[in-house]
Length: 536
Image (spheres, rainbow, N blue to C red):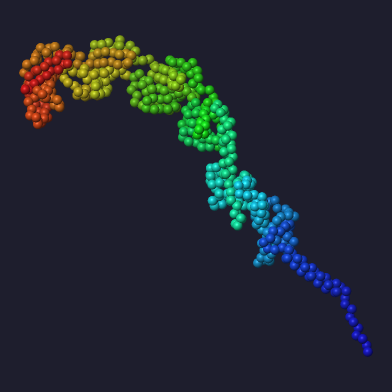
């Protein structure tokens, strides 16, 4: 019986088959080992093996590389091949079969663990403000923590953008373990620092010191200066020896300036500061610079109803009173002659260095037209003028430009009762007058109208003695009686007690201006120039 000959297998085929089985077994072993070693949600170490446009490939020892978004890195430009990083395995296989990783979640988890293991509420931690969010800002402290807007600075939510990207120290005010949230405050640390600086500063400062400060706030009345923990007030009057309208003309918020400590109120902690006090007062030695009677030139810096302020030099001003503007012109307001910015020449009339006051005059730069006026217009001189103005007590008559005389109401008529000059004179009317007196020093001239004619009263006394019966016309009715014209330019008064009236009767109901009446002279007063009449 013959035996069937056994076929010997090809050695190359055997090697190929066995190699394939080994490779499959090896892959299964590797995959099983990695799968069991790495779980989703865990943090693993990885190595950057590639960077594409928006993705980073990371080898975590799995069957395939994991994918990270480029924006998970704070600075994508610093990514390098072979960098070792910590990542969180979010999923081993997404819908595209890719391993998905997260660096930020890993950083947050590691940061959280580091913080809760090393810090507690009330501790100080350093961080960098990364972005703005609703209600405040996020701070990178190894994880993101929330910084409320009110806790960013001492001034609260003021211009938050200026803090973006800046690193500060923060106080941990709240740790929420269940939610893994941390709330920070920078304001608390600043307040503590400010109080410490305030205490230290109050121990160091003294009157007369010059300190450097920062302009914190500007108001109409002055500037608040931060001296480094304590605010001081620089009042507008202590900013410059010269005139300024508003503090903003000299400083702006944020400016660093050197100021002098003028006063310290230890009870309320208020500090008064000065800027102009760092330089000598321009009023020192002012009497020698501008003695009384000297002429000066200055710039008009302010106009007020009663005069004009003129700057002689920086910080030194004098007042030209409205009465010192002109010898002849009648000025109602300084703006009629001057404007702010004008350069004027004036004479120093009076100087009070102690109260920092200088009286100036413009008209004194010219000769006084009133000088020699007494010789020009001696008493009893007759001349003509124009009625310039009427008042209750008299009429001003212009004799020449800038030279007026006054006709008092009592000097208008010898015999008529004149209550107001307008009864006899009109504005602009040309009249002849007599000079009664001249006061050259006080610039006054008294004039008369009635003095153009002789005093008629001596003759009247003889012509109209007591007991004379007269007939005349009513010229005026008053509450106390009626005036009757006896003859031209001569009136008498019938007092109400000298008129037969019933108790219920009134003068204005019984008499009219223009009525003719008869009366008897009962009094002639030569000194008072009065005639009393009676109708009884």
